Every structure is written in structure tokens, then in C-alpha cells.
Amino acid sequence: MQANPERDDSDAVEVLNPQGRGAALILCEHASNHIPARYHGLGLKESDRTSHAAWDPGARDVALGLMRALDAPLIASTVSRLVYDCNRPPEAPSAMPERSEVIEVPGNRDLSEAARRERVDAVYTPFCNAVSALTATRKAAGLVTHLITIHSFTPLYYGKPRDCEIGILHDSDSRLADAMLSEAHRLPTRVIRRNDPYGPEDGVTHSLKLHGIAQGLANVMIEIRNELLVGAEAQHAMIDELLTLLRPAMATLDQQAPGGTHA
Image (cartoon, rainbow, N blue to C red; front, side, top):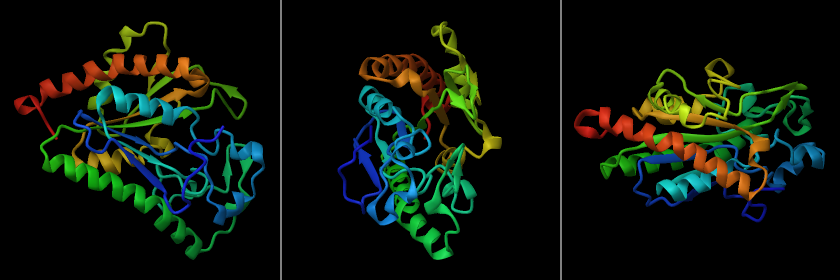
């Protein structure tokens, strides 16, 4: 399955519900496995282009559900993370990886500086500009903003099973993560962990640092094991579970802020 396969190859980011007045701003950096034609499929096999290496299956659907439930703006990349991973800075090798887990990416080998720059300009910069513009608009309007990034992960990594079901990830600002984890007792059947299956040491908190911490916004990255997102029923159930954590967590932060609100 492919997310949004019919789109203009020049359109690298989608901004949905930009007028949303809720307290959340949702990002989905790995929403699509679309590879624009000019990259010739990166030399990948079809099975690789549709695998978790190319995107986060189910993440966009969950992000859309949260967008609707929270009246939140949603900013999503429309290009595969194998072309450019919008959760990585340009200098990171993993921004345009030559290998993702066991999958080789021939179209990313020996990229020239000009080729790397083209991808930064075509994919990463528009995504970052969209986030910056919407953050500034919300600040000017006096809206509370909590940054939430939505991801999914594979249950097997290098053949090793992962038992974590929902990961609550943070970098140096753990306010929103702490508040969510304090609500984890509401989902007693779920395996919910802090900074699992990834953490800051894995280089996965770039968006949190750039778009959240640097802007003074409480922030969190949510990772969901992707077999829990197969089909609409499972996705709707997961959206409800995440709302069980998010709604009271955001309310707690708002109550703790001076005057009951913060930007």
C-alpha cells in the first residue's frame, strides 16, 4: 500500500487543517513512501519501496485521526524518507541513507554535494518552512501549541522482536512525555515505554529539537508498533488509546503554565 500515490512530484509537504485551534500541532515526517519520478525509484525493488524502510505504515492515518479529534493542524511529508528523512538534519548520513536496516538503497550511493543539496531544497526545506510558518502564525494568534510527531516502527528489527507497543520519546524537554507516561495506567494492557525502541542517542529527535525545543514548545514523539495499525478498526482503536494519554497530559501542562496557558 502507498500513501497518497497520486500527487504532483513538486509537492513535498501537505498542510492539513491549518486553521485548527486545538492545542496540538502534529507532524508526520514519514507519512508517505512516494518516490518522485526524477529519482528513478532509487534503484529499489518494489517490495523495498513498500516496506517500513520507505515510510511508517499507518502513521499518517493515526495522525489524521488525532488531527480531527484535537482540531489540530497536521504537517506531513509526501516523499519517502529514503529520498530524504525530514526527521534528520542535512549533515546526517541517515538523512539520505545508503542502507536502511537490511535494505540497500542504490540510488543513495555516492551522492554528489549537488544531488544532496537538491534533495534538501526539494524535500527538507519545504517541510521545515511549513512548520516554522504555522508555528509563527499560532504564536501570533496567542494559541497554545504542543508539538506531537507521529511514527510507527517494525516489530522485528534485524530479526530481533520488539515487545514495546507504544514508545513515548523525548529529548531534553520531557514535559509532555512525562505527563503522558503518568497516564499510562489508563491503558493497562499496553506495553508503553519511555525512549523505546529509540531514543535521543539514535538521532531520532531532530524534529523535537528543531521545531519544539528551539521554539519553547512542549513536545513528544510517539512511536507505535506497526502491526497494531493494520486496518481502519485497529487504527481507530489506537487513536482512541493515544487520546487517552494525550488529552489529560496536555491539560496538565496547560494548568501548570503561568496563567494556565503557554506557547
